[in-house]
Image 1 (spheres, rainbow over the protein chains, first blue to last red):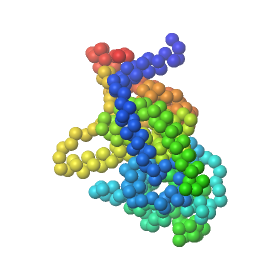
Image 2 (cartoon, each protein chain N blue to C red):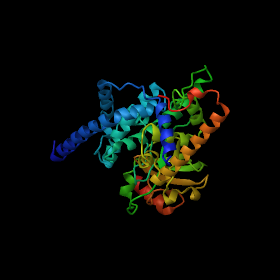
Image 3 (spheres, rainbow over the protein chains, first blue to last red):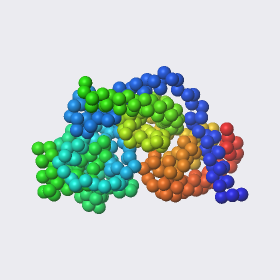
Image 4 (cartoon, one colour):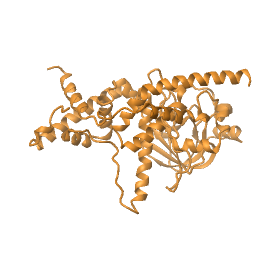
Length: 206
Length: 184
């Protein structure tokens, strides 16, 4: 018996119990409907520039965005994905869900132009912190939102240095920027006690 | 319309054409991925959301888009399930509701279903991705946003835990031999 035999046995047994094995294929019409629905989201179609992409959106677009969840860490980008963008009807405080992922690539020097390109930017007080997530109570929205709270899920593999769990403290204020739902490090996110960072936000959004 | 607009439109048309091809490729595997993890109604909703998110993140689609799309679907599903649980908590105050399961059991193999249900959620998901989506550790890493090495190690451990769980179940429930083995 080889080392792979137990794997093969397990694989065979699992595959035999696949709950989707009897799922009939979808009709072409349904696929066409889904395609149409996805690509009719023209306000967020590919190739839009970040600069005009946010400001020109209608309230309807944001509602669509609220319904449509986002999330994914693209390989090599920082991240935070914004899913419930906007209030949740009748269910407590509204929450923007973000995500922090690993860092890869180079940073540009933080500047107002780059900061302005972020779709989410807020000042918030850290209210809860676990190994997996941090929740901020938003006190000021510079871009995106507004929601009452923002939850950042930590993805194993790294966080912006400025948002490392060990450097976060409940009760303290932070300035957080995110693009495409991905938290931006590179000097764009950090403690609000930093005069340099605060000035950057004021200059970018003031 | 100036030249820049024309270029943008041409680019948009090319993106749409490619995205249609991508959807034709990933649609059916995504349906099955979701059917293995939630009920039919939720699967349909989450599939629509997943494709929407993939379109919005079109520029990030890798040449092999399926593991990326599984990752999107997984996160969309998690969000939908959180919303569903919240609604159930509210609805539960008024009337009893039929709680949908977060993930359907393996079918036709009660012992396997019991063993899978007893595993940590992370292990069960690794095993589903390995066996049902038939992904390599590298592809699993893309879905779960971990390194390929971590995926490989965790998958190995998950298999071991499943074998252990099956052994224990077999030891305590040996009367039901008909549920053993790779039933088809």
